[in-house]
Amino acid sequence: MADFFEDLGKKLSDAVNEIGKRTEDTIEVQKLKSDMRTLRRANDRDLMDMGRMVYDKFVQGEISDLDYVTICEAIEKRDEEMTKIAEEIEHIKGVL
Image (cartoon, rainbow, N blue to C red; front, side, top):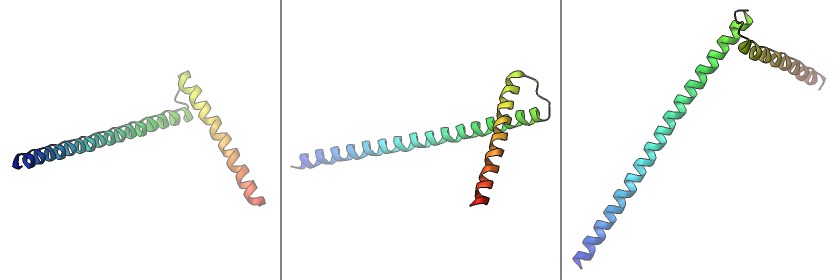
């Protein structure tokens, strides 16, 4: 009977150790995924900053590369459209 309890104790101990290991692995994977998200957000932020710098140079007339000019002109057009929409919203709010 003692062997039964020793075997049971060993099996339970092994199972608990396995669960502990899997939990640690899961936590580590989540930490690594979080690190990746942090790095990705930092890259996205830097890319946005870089894009803003290029656009600012376009506005100042310092960009002549056609690839950049095309994109900057599209941004400029959307900015104008957003201004018109904002004015329309303000007009509607004023009417209501």
